[in-house]
Length: 157
Image (cartoon, rainbow, N blue to C red):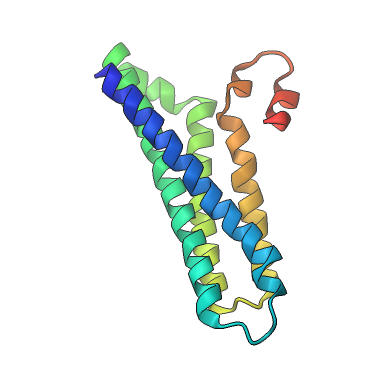
């Protein structure tokens, strides 16, 4: 079971990285490329880019949730059912739930942006959410486990 769990963990982490790149890169692409295109730009091009952003955000949320479920299953397998409650009270669990929630919110915001892709206010909301998704990843690194110099290490991450 442990070898399979480690393998799945590696696959899920890779999927989360790809999804994160797709979602956050989609926002950057939208801001720097799509918004700078001339007014006659085909709407289909913008729609496709926003759909890829949504796909990245949704798969990021799903991947993060699956990673948490896999960790919980590994803990229960190793330490028994009491470990599940203890895991649910950790910062790591909270950070994973928040990141998944932010990613889902980003997907919804991108869907709303799709209805009015020229709206500066909607682009600002998507940008803020993408920034929060990026920042939330720092809470899921080794730096959070440190007792000293935790904040600078998280910033560097």
